[in-house]
Length: 324
View 1 (cartoon, one colour):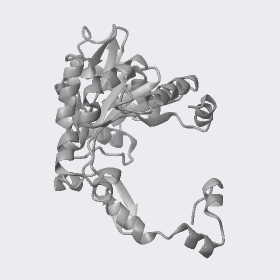
View 2 (cartoon, one colour):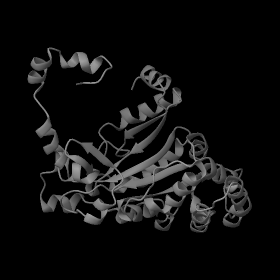
View 3 (cartoon, one colour):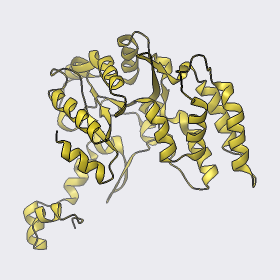
């Protein structure tokens, strides 16, 4: 809520805040006034944010469109909305079948509801699963000669789309860009070789990207060919940031719990915890409470730690150094 705090964050090098934002009413988000005030303060500090709503059927399923519209109205500072359908873990692990039925929202239901709320401005066909963009990682890897983050999660783990604003309306990127055709081109170029491969890839993208763009349907003044080409070829934060500044990211991350566990999804997990017990997939660590057991096994009470080290924990916490 502090403008000064937002400025200090920005000056320290932080550029984007991932902020809980569950709705536009007190029913869905008891802190909605504070969250809206925080967005205003972040704007004054030039500090961007991504809103993160936890989607619960009987709490805020009817407000998804309102959240997106709020982001649209503040697109200068809100870079995206990343929805998270509720996962029954942590504080809500102890639950009944009836309660889960009343609150559970799956990924497909969520995007169908968004289509309904926004009168078809964003359709379910506009969303693509996370691994859809994997060819981009491989192309950047080919260009730079360095391993890149590979988005190879299971398709049911989530998805995303990008939308632009035209005359107050939401225009998904899929309305004017054949993303499937473009991704096939990127996939083909990702295995391009030879000494002049960077030049060949760049020329191919500049020559062929136009084939996948419907200029008449693209938002006025948007040079999508240049944005897409630079983002793909450069593959760095600045080029991707330019793309993000022109659009609104909409995504979903559907974490698992003990009642909907899918072993195929665990096998393809791309977010892991490194622990004394080994590498653990995110949904195993949190959704099955494995993390709680690991922490219990390898933790000691504060009093015991302080007696053993002869130090006060609060001094380590605020001293800027590691706790050991």
